[in-house]
Amino acid sequence: MIRFGGDYNPEQWPSPVWAEDVGLMLRAGVNLVTVGVFSWSRLQPGPDEFDFGWLDRVLDLLGSAGIGVCLATPTASPPPWFTRLHPTAMPINHDGVRLSHGSRDTYCVNAPAYQSASLEITGRLASRYAGHDALRLWHVHNEYGTTCYCDHCAAAFRRWLAARYGDPATLNDAWSTDFWSQRVSNFDEVLPPRATQYLSNPAQLLDYRRFVSDAMLEHYRSQRALLSGAPVTTNFVLGGWVPVDHARWAREVDIVAIDDYPTTLAERAFAADLARGWARGGPWMLMEHAPSVEAREIAQPYLDRGATGILYFQWRASRGGAEQWHPAMVPHEGPDTPVFREISALGATLRDREPVAVTATSALIYDEQTMWALQSPHLPPRAEGYEATVKRWHRAFDGPVDVVPPDASLGEYDLVVAPLLYLLPAAGHRALRDYVSGGGRLVLTFDSGLVDEHCRVTPGALDDLIGARRIQHDLEPATATVLRHTPDGRPAVLENHYGGGVVRYVATDLDDLGLTLLEI
Image: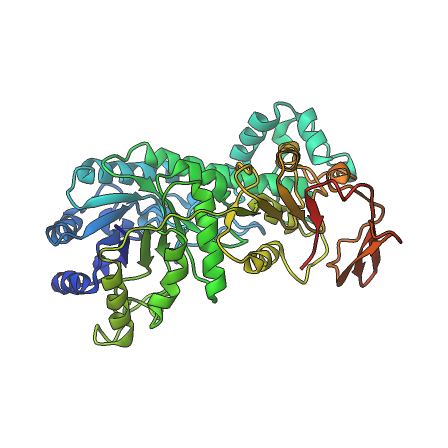
């Protein structure tokens, strides 16, 4: 079965509308709806007040119609009473400004009061609905991604660093702190990378992204531990701003779920292959995307790449609020519209359809930590960023391709492409060498393997693998690539041409390696 439906927010509507909604859902072929994502203020109107009666009625109504529920924990949007009572649980931004209530995601994931309140509401939902007949999936939180720089985070960051490095001397070495007199004598001297006079330490910036990802993962795990009766997931939001290492998180969910709001079918295909790569053979689903009069065409890239569910945000368009003009399955004009008819047509085609199995012989390596490292402000601006580069390579493939993290098993692939793999720790070096020595074909691009996991330069780290020696480097994007040969036809020098000069790779033994130096 392929799950089909979307976010349903009945708390925004009077109860007579609920019965109409269920009838329309059946008409559209909906078999799963996500409920409760932003309902904390309804479920808990005060510190010691709880109201689950409306949610009981909604779940009973859906269940009696045979519509499954993906039940969310509402912790992505704490209610006003919480932030009034716990102002230090509000996030502080990079510039030191504490944000005010009035939007969503107004929380610090490391604030003890927020952690406690999250477990309180999640525990009550779990004890009440774990055995409900309509429950099909637990949906923890929503689109983890809020970065905070407050004192709660500072203390948690120090604990994280102590666990990671053990002692200040090891931290100093990893962060190259002798540059600009940043050496610390104890972990208490370390702060989050808040706004400072000039450029921040790139290793500190990268470690803080890792820390934020781990802190949010712990928040997810603490809720997951309370839930039972159905598989558990959270929805991954995509984008370079998101401080979540999704490849690592994917091991913690029962089904990989992504939210995808691209502009082209090619970008949808990339997101689908990426989700399948994160799932590593397990199930994945599209948890959110925008409804459209082209719903069938838009759904196809996901379905062709193994999606087990096609869901939208949202079911019924909101009358007010910040997303009142967001597309919906039931628009403001009602069901007698092209959008609803198209959505219903898609639902009809999915009723008896099963997810497809995808077998790819090629892989494309995508590393979010490399993307984070390349976003460091100490690097020159690029005409094309990391994600755009990887997507360009993805478009060049003809046929299915798995988009995989650097620690994925590569032996099953005939071809592996690793675009712009700037950040390459020792384990990554071993994996690439093992793949090539086992007979695999590897494609590397410019700026690969320039630094280790601490953003420390590693000169010549790939020379033995590529059979070439880099004798000059410029971080500006190349405008042209030329492979020059010896008189007898052997490759001799690869030249990357830049506005500021030429980078030359001197070939040593390209013939016997299963590797290509290539730019497209």
